[in-house]
Image 1 (cartoon, helix red, strand yellow):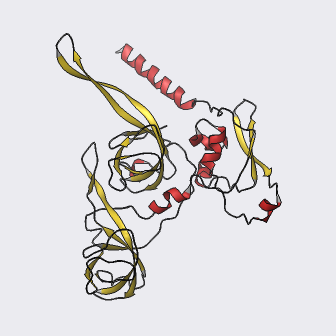
Image 2: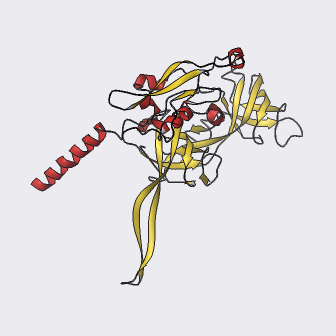
Image 3: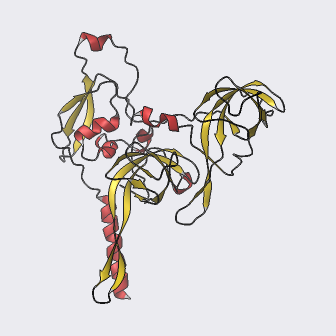
Length: 343
């Protein structure tokens, strides 16, 4: 018993030491002394010029938890300087404006630099929709179409039931109920991913009401559901690791394909109720095993190997039980059920 208690105390001390002493920040090879910000830069990209682990840029900027939710306002023309503190740790700071030519002076510069490229994830901020049931929350549905239409496109009329309680709502998003999202570990139904089809504008309230299709990504038809359009705000959180230990799995790849790569959007089997938030960075790990024939028993055996880390993801949208993330980099394909842990 004494040995067990001693071992537990040593393990606890080791974990506390590890938590108290994170891996030192490493400056990238051939890191510049300074960088002049230009349109198209991102905080992640700028930090990659200076750090081997660019996701840790809040540390080199010395941001606290509140500043992570509202990171530094950095604009094109600003000069970013790499310095060292009294302990030799790297620091980045804005040293002033480096506008160097009349061309730069003439530009109207108002947009601050985002954390990651917004054009990559912006299409997914409102489109993926996780709902509790396959009827899309029993929302409004298309019950009829204008004459001689099998499918609807921009400018076509649709007749919709279930929208009369929101006569003031003009723009609606159209979805098709998807398959249940099953937790790869527990097989629990975490929700249903409703596939985004397009938008419609209410022309006349009633039962049924008259709607006009405004935009579409896929064919729209009878039985498709409508939800009031409410575009979530693109939050510019600084990338940061979760404060608590996180263990999740790749639940699905958006678009229904089997695997993903850099720039793909994936769903995780954990959400806000597990502590995930916008801006969290997680590392991708692949389960590994090796099957071989035991020469002594002449039988096949399989051994489980330590998981292999191969990439990073950035969480940009959360639901209660599910989250969406962007694959920032990966050394190989991202597969369903791959592990996600603190970086």
